Image (cartoon, rainbow, N blue to C red; front, side, top):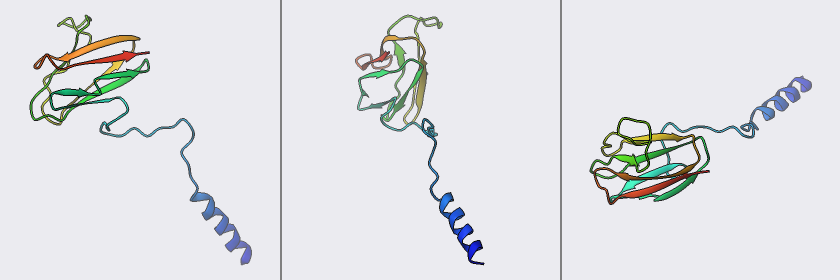
Length: 122
């Protein structure tokens, strides 16, 4: 009987020490500040400049009470000639773009052109 209790105790202790394997990550369902998230608030992008690794996705989240629209300053292949362009984003909406090619990508808000930012991809 003592042997059975000892085996159960050892098995239970082994189950409580689970750790996520190295290199594994849990992806949140919604963007969190920091990481590769740009917050739009008070008619400004924060951070205004960001450096990310090739293949990273950047997400812009509008926390202003007015709409904003993100558009790249550099030429691309879409119909508007931009590399990336969001639809107008109301409060609480977000837009994400995956940066596959290294380079510097200046952008602005097409509704409020004084709002500017830059993504650098290394």
